[in-house]
Structures are given as structure tokens and as C-alpha cells.
Image 1: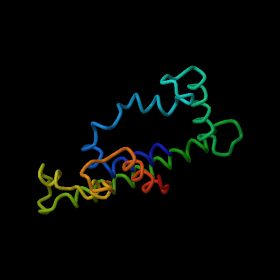
Image 2: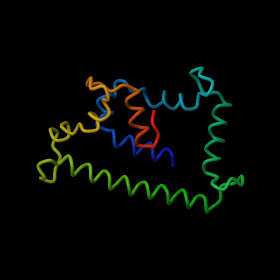
Image 3: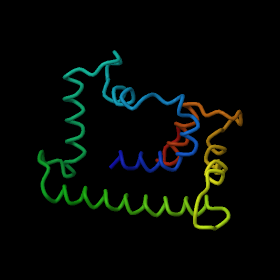
Image 4: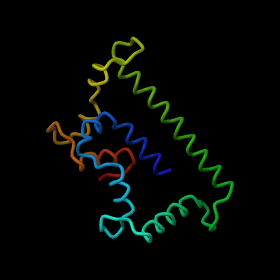
Length: 145
């Protein structure tokens, strides 16, 4: 569920993130960073097992040591709720980008949509740093960074 919330925040900043893509580490590096608890740049068998245990604990909503059908259904419902919300946000964003209301988003309309970039660029230097992106992520997830 946290992953879906993160995905929603990432979609909301897609315009800003695409411009800062050269500063973003490849997906495999981000994956390693999340699991690499000792900071040695690699994921050990123990770190992988600990990550699986954390995932199990999140899925085992009532903490009884098993993932039952009720928990699986609750997770499925949460995923569907997030998907519906994401679909609505995407449609809304598309309509806002279609500034001439012709039912299509041109490349110029798409490029011109920089509101989130401008909001994320807290120091106004025309560049997004990891700190600025982390702050925006915190805003979308209800935390300040």
C-alpha cells in the first residue's frame, strides 16, 4: 500500500521528475538502497530475508502470523481504491494540460505544464535537487522532509 501511495506521488510530480531524470538513480540502485541496511552497497541474503519479513508484517494486518483471505481481500480493495483515485487524477491532469480544449494534448501543451516543477523548485534556480524532490514527496505523503 505504501508503494502505491509512493506511485501516486511520483505520478503527480512526473513533469518535474522527467526534467530531473539525469539526477535520479536507476531503479536497481534505488532498490538496493532500500534493502541495504548496513550501507555496504549490496544486499545480503540476511537483508533480503529481513525485507521479506517486513513485507509479511505489512501484509499480515492483524498480526496473527498468517496472511489470510480476509487480509488478501482487504489489500486487493485498497489497491483498487488507489487505482480508481489514480485514474481520476490522471484524467484531471490530462484535462488541465489540454489548454485549448480540443480533446488532445499537444507536445507544446505537455511541455508547458510546469506548475509542479515550479512548486518543487523551492530555491527558484530552475533545477530540482534530491532535497527538493524529497520535500515534495513528503508533502504528498503527509510528511515534511
